[in-house]
Amino acid sequence: MYLFWVTIKKEFRQLYRDKVGLLLMFVMPVLLAVVMTALQNSVYKMINENQINLLVCNNDTGNKSTDFVEALKKSGMFNLQETSQKSHEEAEALAEKQDALVLLIIPQGYYFNLQKQVNQRSSFALEGFGLKANDTTSVPIDTLQPELIFNSVLQETYRYSVKASINGIMQILQNKMMIGQLYRSINEHDIPAETEQKLLPSAVSIKESTLHAGLNPNPDSTQHNIPAWTLFAMFFSVISLGSNMVREKLSGSFIRLKVLPSSLSVLILSKQVLFLTVTLFQVAFIFSIGRWLFPFIHLPALNLPSSFLSLFLVSFFSGWCAISYALCVGVLAETQEQANGFGAASIIILAALGGIFVPGFAMPELFKHLSYVSPFKWALDGFYNVFLLQKSITHIFLNILPLLALTIILQIIIYLTLKRKNLI
Image (cartoon, rainbow, N blue to C red; front, top):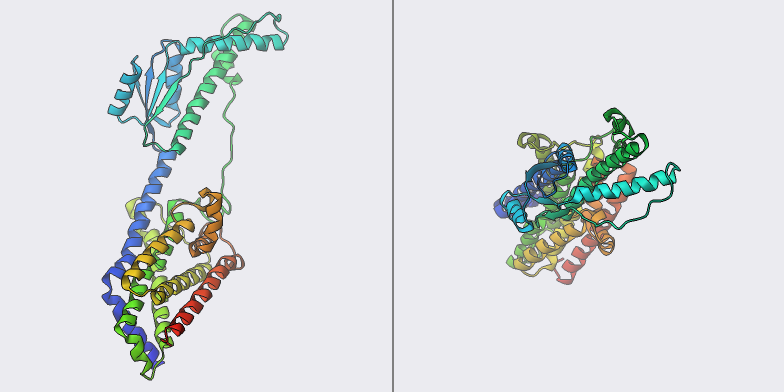
């Protein structure tokens, strides 16, 4: 036992001297968690709170154009600027000058053309209701369409949102015109404002909630990013631990241990105990930053789960799997360059497959299947089950068992490799 604790003390001194490794294990993941959470939080705010700069080039002189522009302003989605009649090229140049992400060009005669379409459809409707003789003939009407021009930096998701919002406003305007025309055709005078308001369809009321909403607040960018980048920090111990293993092999430490009254298994076990402790400290450190520091930099605070036992189990087995992988890389690599290069690249690939960078549901079908080989997939699902879904320990074990199985496989590879190299 004394030899075991002395070995741990030696490993701790080596780790303490490895300033770069400590930075990679603690500072880098904290910066990633802060930056990614802040960026995603700004995206959520852009969707829910912030407004998209919209320039409306209204080339139409119809009265209804004012109603449409006012409806766009009232939607709350746009920071709207309006310009008078301009050519297509002039409108694009003005949009670029004013940093408008979206340019809406309304062609001349659009609302007059729209009114003709409404009149024709209302005549067909009256004939269908039996209120008018069937003498309406379908007359071809020139199709004039508003043109949406997007800034190339605007992603496709926002484009769909903008188009859906503008289509919805235009649909409301057409419904209003249709109801007014039908009322005018039947009663021979304009529809009263109160009656029009009653006849216009209102927005469908939808109740929104999340699974287990009573147990936890709605998930936000912090709830997703802190567990993800904590896992990334755990597995990036491959840089420090992998290099440590290679350095000791090249320096002859393993050979000297064979002639001492000790065992290489004590050294391997001490490394695992020390670095597993470090990974658990990483969890506590990064989670504490998310819980108490994030509110001071105007980011959502991390909501800790109710079951700390479930959190500990997922953290423990995720950390053990990460340490086993780092040891495996260190044992197999022949040089520090191999350990560092392969270790860093493989962690990034496994993290991408496991859903750290892109959510699993957004992956192509092939990569959804490939994600099951990544320990990040099982560990991240375990954290999400603990944080977001408040699953029981029984359910958490479904995420832990694949991690445990992979850890055992890695431990066997470590033993067989050391045996093959006559180091044990």
